[in-house]
Length: 339
Image (cartoon, rainbow, N blue to C red):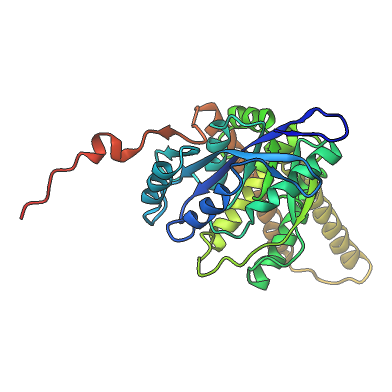
């Protein structure tokens, strides 16, 4: 605590819980933890507020490397580090939800494991939250993300499509470096259903988000865990959990298909009666069949995706499952190797 010179009162220190979902952090994670260690004592934000990192939640999402040993070493070295173990790989958003549910701080900050986000920018996010009275703040990079141009372009396009299908929900500020009020983050983690897109769930309950400018750092030699297939899945989950506007698209598609059929029929009648054009029957049949069958199959696919999400939630499929450290249980009791 420090003394406020203008009032003589003690200035409160904002307690921050940091959540990092860990999938492939064997090489880079410890460096991020070392940086966070410098913020465990009260530190000033650019606007003069005080904050400290009260705890670090490392969520092990069962990646392909030996990140588990890094989590154990970090927990042994610092008492404010708490590993969370998931039963299997659930994905970044589910792992983040699991970490948020396990926090106890006034504020929750989510970071990536690769060091791309500078932990010292937490102060800037906190300043934006206090300035704008916002319960949710996203980092707004002032530089281009170190991704290929194709990925950046498709990301912008995907967010625009998502905004259209979600009924106006602006997904442009969505970023994995975010600050959220603790009680809001923990409530979302408790009530979010299976397959939910985290930022969409936050948008349901949080005040309009604010943003804070940050500079992204180079990821180094770390290869992104997202391939084209996973990115498409990521985008589609965002669309499905944004609302039911996708089902309205199905209705519009049906109306458009019917209009195309009527227009085509009218054109064929005019050609026959006015110009005496001999229209082959198979031509019109093939055109109508292709248009209608394509529209029907596309509509059924969208409906099936929504039904799949609903069935997964109705069956009680959990978004994540927290377990104890596998090495501390029966799975860790391996027989010694024979010489």
